[in-house]
Image (tube, rainbow, N blue to C red; front, side, top):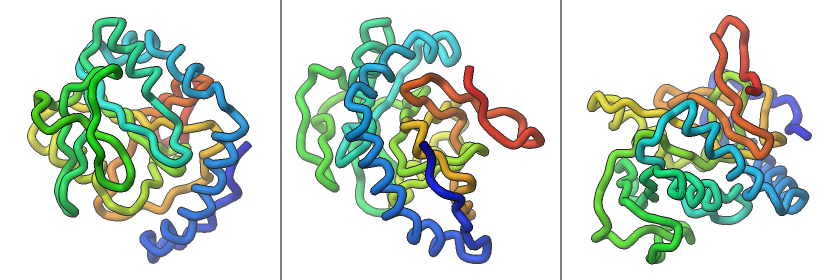
Length: 211
């Protein structure tokens, strides 16, 4: 199941993104209702993530609305010896801050209806970010919510020389033909779905491939 061809306007990617966010959100809600075991299936790929990306610090997110939950996956990664963390949403225009957190840990209320670690939890720089999204395309571009938090965070961490892998978490049916790309957008390194890890392939081949 997939979203229809995007027909995005190259001249105005911001307007194109805004036009498709509602459609993408509705599609994701349908997928979430149709696949209640998706979070458990996602967690089954924890060893595949470690085999490819190592046992570093993994950052995930607390799911809201119809986001595919990464919490089972994060728990499994922790059981396998990885350090785990969640972000604290900052003021508008600032990058995310990541704090060490295990799935059984306490959570405080955060912005936009989400939950986040207490601010006194240890700050960290994740090696792998598991990012939520509304949609993705075969070139690895991500359709987010418009706040720019993840793009800004990725740019700051990589700009400081930190080696970082960014993996989008999604249902297979969230894939679009093409996401409009703005000047500050950061591409994903991979997409993880309940069916497995989709790894970016060279640009000339134009897409993602299942492992």
